[in-house]
Image (tube, rainbow, N blue to C red):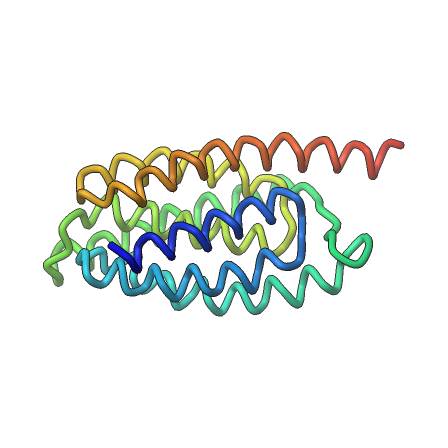
Length: 188
């Protein structure tokens, strides 16, 4: 429970900074990722446990990518995906979800293999799109956050469920703020 509480704190701080397009969101997020790997292992949410290693690598990439495309010393530039990118990521996500869910269902003792796999895969895609500064990342995070709230309540990870309720609010805020920033940057 103590590790989960620290994971919640660092994740919340990370996402709040992300809504502000602040570069420090990435190193703070790395701490949350490391702590959540322990929480997910102990809860037998293996897809999410494995996801933390990928999130860690994406966090390092995202930090350097945001630094490369920053508007000023602390804020990054943002953009929309092309229609082809949207189709590609949607199809890739569904294919990866089905493969991982099948493996988790038939070859592990995962406690919620279908839901866990879905949120793991689409969290991975959302995090990649976040690193690439795509506004649509927030739409995916909103969907994932809603599902995670239910999953964590089912697994009796109430702090994490509470965290994801707050993350849902922050994802909505992030979407609105990023859209406003995009309009301001491109049409002012």
